Length: 209
Length: 177
Image (cartoon, rainbow over the protein chains, first blue to last red):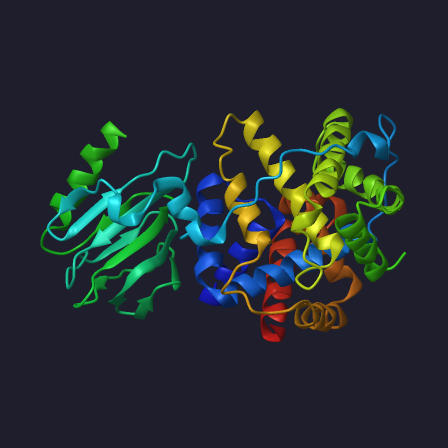
């Protein structure tokens, strides 16, 4: 499946409300940071809104319009204190209590009750993640800074979706490093010099999840 | 009723707190909302509760409706979709705090400069290109949220055909967007 198609599928699934909690947070942060993705979402939502408009109804029997004339407390989020949807869950990125995984690479896992694992990853300037591939799909969204790998350069608001076939070595930008939001459907598989050590580490770590 | 008439009712509800306009909007959209929830496999009781909930939000949060950003039917659809997600997550005992995030998105994103007429143009371009059968598959997959397996059973076609048709539709849409 080509990359754009997988991204569009993610946005359409978001518009239809079929994503689980982790992917829903991931997708809404993506839409927040990426204007193109956001307008695509509005097109899909518009199509689904039209579908609602044209659909056949089923009679409502237990209440009438008067039962809906309630005035609730209206809470309107202020845009100025809103940095991004993920910050709403984990607070400001600069205050996160990062856990170092190995040199130059730290992570933080927000407490989300879902089968998909949502993680924040911080790469120090110039640091790299050893060559690896994935047991399932991996979704990466750049929140800050940028990184490069064999497939190109990714900056704030860019997304990369990798399947099992992709092997890559992400390297953070030399000047500012990189903070990413990721979803891994299954653990990554490392290759190269330290590959077997890192795979063992991932395996042991899985007991403490 | 056409789509802009519905949006005009929504503007009257927002600006004038017009109860007559609300009753007309209610008569048109409430049965459709209930049918949406039923199609999404909620019980009759849940479907009625959520429909009431959605329309109470339409009334009480009408100030958040921006007619330059979306048609009233789209705005109401997103509220209904979010209510459905919340109910399903509550049933599965999952985190429901994402509500605020989704709500923010339809309050209007600052990076989102595209206006309603551009969105409408894109949608009519897509509708012209997609056949009736393709639009039906879109409805079954993304509106009714039926599994590919269920769609295959209902249309009496193999599962692989459903998957390739959806893929084909997405590729076709991608060329137009």
